[in-house]
Image 1: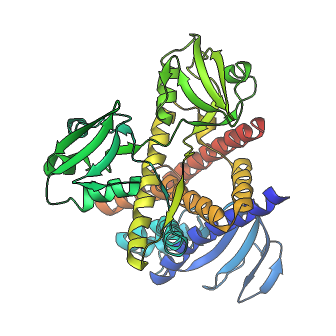
Image 2 (image 1 turned 180 degrees about the horizontal axis):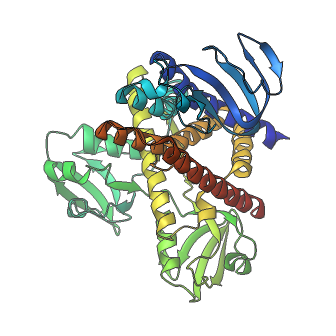
Length: 451
């Protein structure tokens, strides 16, 4: 029951925010909005100015005369806003039999159309930033007290800085650093006009790296080029009937070494395992205070059947920020999560991570929503923010049915100054809708078998 309640709350908030973006943008662009729906399918109940509050469907020939019907529908897996004169999830094309009217979507110019179609994604981004900002301002940001490097970005400029994995940064330009937040601030912000002298501890001895300002700037063009070492990856789940289960892996274990290689970061696990398909190799696990030795043989696809993630086991502090710096850090948090999301998608496409480990449907959303809510309001809000940002990223992808797919069509129509035939739009929508349903069915199936 907890899962159901928190799933409804989570999806309800995200869908409302997203669809309200489309709704508000359409109203601002003087378009008529016929329906604002939470859920798909049969109308359970709703309200509009003409009929008031009613249950069940409205008459098929119902004309709202410009008034929006706000409704709750049967399937709580999303929602939609039906804008007059637009081919959307309702597949209603009756408007095509008449000339375009000034209040219809199809009668507007390209810019207002693009504004309306991207407004849902923008609202999800705004929700994410507001949550990150509020947490940073009212509670403070969680700061990990480590200055040890786990990974250097794989680009020539980053490698030329001289940093190596497991280097412990002691000071930057003579100023001691005690956490990763200070490393980033002193190396990139406070040191923005001069070269940097960084004292590190490497293999038990102190060394000094002198790094040119231009090199630091070039190395950080795609984000901070160093990643912190937070400890060995944490096994979150072990799939049933998998090589990992046969080898004795348990949820809660920490991966200390694989094939005699000390594990520094989460991505390293995928690289080592996928490079040893069908080969048996030793694994050292940390279980509580005990060290466990085992061996595992990956399947032919290079998987052993575990879900794993970084998990910092050291000291954590909270650092508070003022009104404006909280917003700055909110943008940084959102950018970092976006980078992680695209990295995850890349790993799925390249086969380094199993689809079922990267994506979750209603069941997993309900599970994580309930677990985060049990931990308190802040963990639940963080989960909501990350889910909202994920929804924005997925929705803007240029695929049929999604906002990104609509965006591409509108943009092409604007460039060629010609609207696509209604039949083609319907065909695109139908294809996309079927693909989305199949994908959702597959995700739900994976959710259920992983219970």
